[in-house]
Length: 295
Image (cartoon, rainbow, N blue to C red; front, side, top):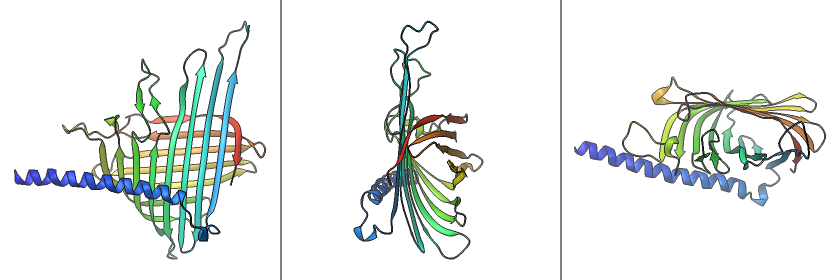
């Protein structure tokens, strides 16, 4: 009986401690982007790309049929990196949000993603370099299930939120391909939508889930042609208690530049997370819009 009480008490302490660590890491991630000392401005290299895509169709006395429609999406990709050997720092915030409306129906959300990543590596002169990273994945705003009657709300900002800390080794000897592998600690945070964090085999309702496992991430930034670029992130994550099951995230964007401000984007995302769905998820789109690199 005493052992059982000690185990339960230990789990509660671990959960409370992990929540504090998660909040601290989130604040550190924000500070990395918000505060850069003046003395280091010459060494930090910032880039900021923004984009707006709009699609619109309108009819008046059109006898062949059709419905008015409008769709728009916003994208933002900010990074600030520093190569100060032997240390290398890479930070990125990527967000996209879009909505669409057909006829008299209400607006529906089409894209809704937020990704933040901070990475630090140390070049020891080896074939691989040790690194530590922190990544955050969530939604920009509310998400809905439009296939169900009433379009119920099924997600919101940081509900769920995925935070992953990884320690391991990275291989970055090629300019276009960087891959890393290490031990990962993943936290799933929810508030209202506990289906993403609650363990069905336990009687308690868990809004916080802590997982340990191994993670592999490969980033590709490849120029296919003069005005055609392919950016890709391929992530694998498996928990130690179930190494035969892997989470898979393959995020691709092919961008073709028409001129300095007009571009064509083809995003394609492949996702498999058994905790979310037993089926493989896929999302793709084609967008022509205004893209401008501010930095």
